[in-house]
Image 1 (cartoon, rainbow, N blue to C red):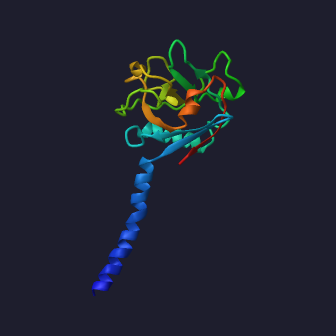
Image 2: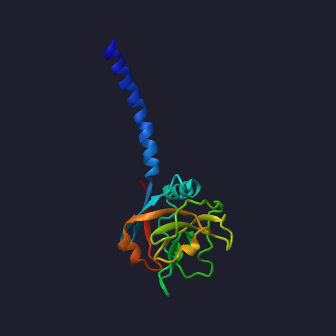
Length: 182
């Protein structure tokens, strides 16, 4: 009888293992952003703390939305600020008069993830000035310290975990070859 119970418990534990693995893998979701000629940036997503922003960005990445886009804004002067991507029009260049205004039409409301706009933080850019609930497909990577004044205005939904050298050398016009989810 004991061996029978042991077998039943073994099968039951196997049945629960995939669910637990899926739950932990969702909390460990990352984006791998391949930048042409520079390398790969890995961004750990705050799936639990900013689920709406993360799920939206993940879905766009899975659709190939970011592939071929360019960083259309990289501000390093007078001090390191941000690198921004996500305007579909950037595939055709970064100097157009409407660059930075492109979207998918979605509006992702602000989420207070509890994280700050410290160096290497990743946030959802608002498309409308002064409307923190107008985030969509554009996101930024914080390039330096001293930008926490952005806190409370933009959802911080992740942070760079590797590829710091790539981030530190981003330039306006750098092209993303692919964004994958892992």
